Amino acid sequence: MKYSMRSIMPKISTPVLLSTLWIFLTFNAAYGDIGTLYQSVYVGIIKNGIQYTQVFLLFGDVLVEIGIVMILLSRVLNRRANRLANMGAGIFLTAVQVVSLFVGTPTLAYAFVSIMMIGAGVAIVWSAWNWHAVPSSPEISQMSPNV
Image (cartoon, rainbow, N blue to C red):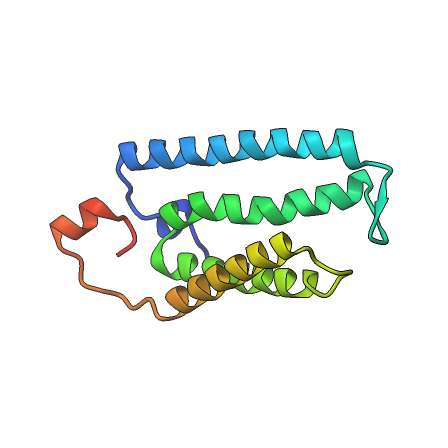
């Protein structure tokens, strides 16, 4: 089956697209700065049996980038592609977060944030799984491109 960009991306208003792209850019800039701080402080350190290398931190950056890119994809993909992307990313990131709780002994703060992330991941997957097509009306389609 051959797909074109038009078949995967619904029509989205330019202001919505621009604001979504700015959110995407800002999250990437902020996380890029956080990643740079981690590089300068942690590379070469072994903490709780984990050796912090550039590759290890890059893996963490890739995991965070999946969530950041979903901000953009959730706005621009059509319903079918959106559901699949959200279920795939949600399942993967939730599984990674659950597994991370069993590596070493998590701090209370890490456990708390992990539980919040796991709950959000489950809610994302549940919402995407239960997303049924709704006949669009002009009012609804102006608010959200992926009704």
